Image (cartoon, rainbow, N blue to C red; front, side, top):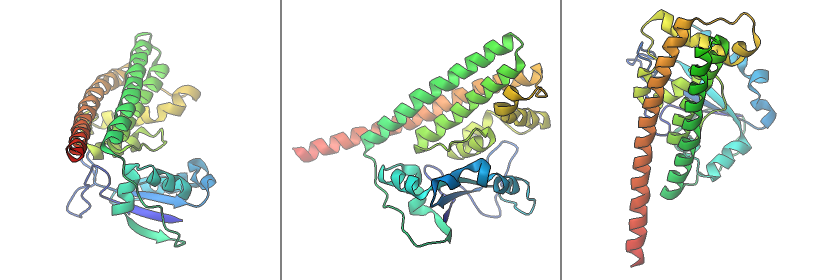
Length: 273
């Protein structure tokens, strides 16, 4: 098993010094990401093997700097590297090995062409942003019918898709997680403007977001799940803000990728002549 610490991954540069507060009320986190690589895909089962570790990292008061982790098999990581997935390529290049049970090396990272980067990012944006919009529309319809549980679940799904849209468009990787607090943290590290969508200034707003985080399971299966109309109204407004920021950030990224692809075409044309 190999564990890599990455604190300068993909498009972001995250501060990791003691002078930087790990959490601000506006939402920006300076933290550490762990990539845990296991030799058997069955060991990637989060509920079976990793939930206690995740719970400890969240609640252990001796851990001052937030730590999050993802788990993948060696075969998965090597496949991602060979496919040129730049999230893992950057980790392969810049990550720090914390613990290594064996010395079997990871595959060498390949690079996607500028054209491929644009194509992949555009596909991610088109699919995920549309899904985020559709879930938001479903949530508003449910809210208009006073179906609060259905609305909460739909808002959760809209946020999950929106944050995944950011991660996939900007890094070509989104962890398979329904934890929107985790996805929000990763997404906000990509662009701090995203923190403006769900600020942490007020206790009740943080509580409402935490309630929404539980809605993926509890809004569907628990008769005790409750969420107020006031909370849903706030979530509706902030979801609209989030979607606008996601659209802006992703559009800016795609414009950069179009420029890079265009420069690549121009360079190849010049060399051909």
